[in-house]
Length: 224
Image (cartoon, rainbow, N blue to C red):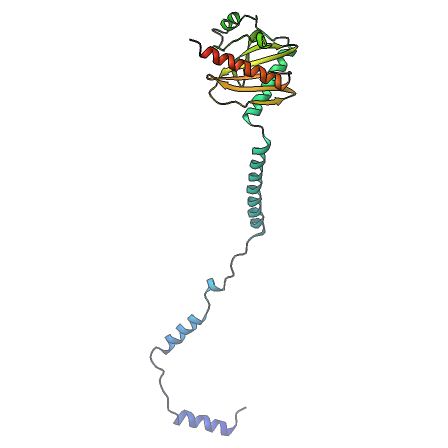
């Protein structure tokens, strides 16, 4: 509640006080200062939060990549190589020939009978030698299929043991010896042919057969 003195003072100020006009542009400068002091919407907006499913998805990708790498490393160790698979197939063909009593398509100990028999049946001519003098008697031959290709199978006997010798053209080297399914195997490459011998004979006896045959093939190649 104002008093008479207050009213008199207010009237005196209005009548006697000096009035100053505001500088030109003051209002604009004040407005600009207010705009500069006010944070922009972008500055006040908090950063987007990562959604939980996104974090799970990223973790799954990392885990999947690691699992795939581990599987490839394991497969390279656990899976059998080409030579191992071929050895298993050779041993399987040996067993089938014994079980089916189909060791030979042409039964003969004469190499001049066995070798011509393959003519026209294969695209190559397998070397055929009788090693009876070394204790490995030729008993015949047959056609077989190994690794999806037709091959020559020559049959020898070492006492009571049957030796199947598989032959086909192949420039690549073959493993020298291994054992598959309880059978001894000897393999080598010679003269552009790959040879795989398999038997239930001892590894030493089978290696003796392989060495005798290799020497005979070399001798025949060097004979004019």
